[in-house]
Image (tube, rainbow, N blue to C red):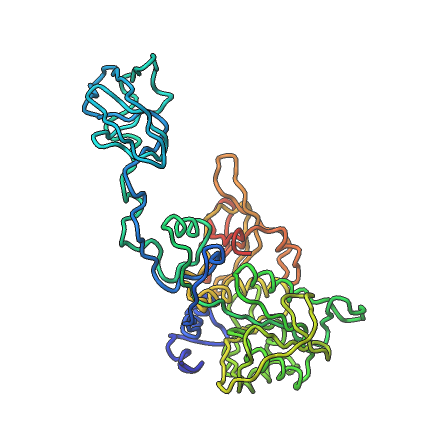
Amino acid sequence: MKSIEQIAAELQGYDPKALPADQVNAFLERLVDPVSDTEPVSVFDALDRVLAEDVISPISVPPHDNSAMDGFAFDSAALAPDQPLTLRVAGTAFAGKAWSGTVAAGECLKIMTGAIMPTGLDTVVPLEFVKTMGETIDVPPGVVKAGDNRRFAGEDLMAGQPALRRGQRLGPAALGLIASLGLPQVNVFRRIRVAYFSTGDEILSLGETPREGAVFDSNRYTVFGLLKRLGVEVLDMGVVKDEPVALETAFRDAAAQADAIITSGGVSMGEADHTKAMMKQIGDVAFWRIAMRPGRPMAVGRVTSPHTLAPREPLIREQGRTSHRTGPGAEITPGQTGELASAAHSAVLFGLPGNPVAVMVTFLAFVRPALLRLMGASESEAPLLQAHSSEPLRKKPGRTEYQRGIVTRDAQGRLQVRTTGNQGSGVLRSMVEANGLIVLHHGQGDVAAGDVVDVMVFDGVI
């Protein structure tokens, strides 16, 4: 496992006081090691899990040549250019069982979609293209050519070939593919555990009495939603006051239980609170000023606990109470936390800014790809679409900007994007209105109306 200093030395031009956004992900790729533990799960439990090994098809899909249409199957040798074709119907082939009869020259077989193609027949004319007259059909010239509407055995997948690759995150289509192979379960990487908490004396939890200078915590609920969308096991540790003992306890407990820790607040340069000092004291942590907007301050590294608590028993301390949680506000009766194990455990740390929009942007740009890597996923960064900006955008070269945008289609069907207006990092409402982030890259300058820009769309991500 490389130290923060070793990773930094590998990056050319690394400067923690002015770090380009693309270098952040390069750093995190070196910091985060994928989990190695695996487990078998049923197809019903495999959604959003990451495959731990290739899925090799035990059968060919489809297993036999079959009809892609309801229609009439015949031998294409009977086709003649620009000539109609009259065929006698010898019978009907249904899906689910093979046709047991014979089809002679000048004959065809009525066939259902998915039914096995009898030997000697290679073409299907759809029902709607023919004229039926008693026991015969007339096929007009030019409506089909040889081989039409016939699916070949194994054209989707051949037996012995990889159907899905290790590191693939399983979506609904993948579940259907696994089931189509007759496989009741697959091996996946274990679900990672992510602990998160907010820091600061000014943060109120829901249910507390409002007071002057204090604000209700929104970051925990935003982070909770982002993590649930990833399909990780979520450990909500509440709000931690800016007190050394409370912070150390929170970090130690989180590191003992989780693969990753996410905090919000307390990482800005020059802040007088104890969060940064505690991160330095108990972990190997780098503090960055990223050349980006919003979300410039960020901390990353590792926190090590001297022991590991029993899994799936999160010990939560908030406002002097000890409780177990499965999500914000979901408190249940306190219980045993499990016996201590002797081995130390190291968790990856992400210290995010305190402003709500900055939390979401840094999560989407950096934390989400890193967590996907931790999960064992082979592809981690969200794809960028291109859209025409419907307005001019001011942008200084030398930093990456993520502006909240609304993507629509213009009268010509082209994607276009406009901003939500006020881009302040505390305007959380703008993230609700947006359906994507306009990504203005490090070297990019002002954007004129009509210029093409990159957009990170939210659909399926948040």
